Image 1: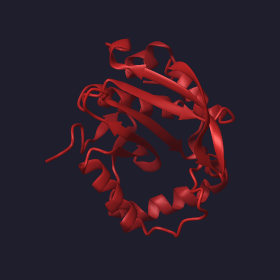
Image 2: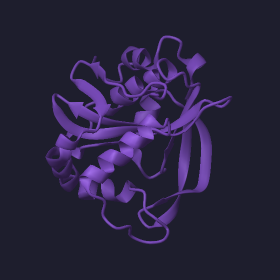
Image 3: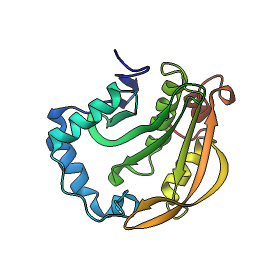
Image 4: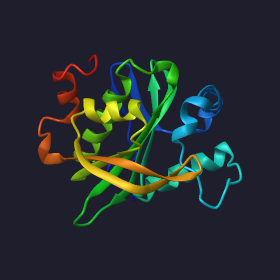
Length: 201
């Protein structure tokens, strides 16, 4: 039995969000290699030390399992037909909470074009409609100005700081927490982005 809202393919203009596929291997390897320095300071790490490398097929299988079981919605982002990042809905809680968090990364070669606000808005709208979630939050290191700008362009509510929230780049790091609930955007978050002029349609 499929989890609410998954699998899914979201498409608006030049952006497509979909499940990862085995044939993404070469494109994934290229974009990750090209962005080692860009993404390194913000990558989650293990407090036990470096983990053994995971093969791409194992990664695809793990993400597929998480999607089927309702633990996450792991979207790959395509921009103009090219793999360019990821938007992951994780830590999904059902029942009376119906909450999740969203994490994202983008190929640094495409930064500053208004891509990620649009992509995150598409995913949040999907969470609130097809998946039936009530609340979504985004947790960002204060030093990560690019990610904070995404949350601010989306008009997410700043809810405060979380000390030592996540192990990033080898240490426990503080994060700023932003959130939004479905009743706050009855017309959809993507519509808000366009109305605010934060991104091109």
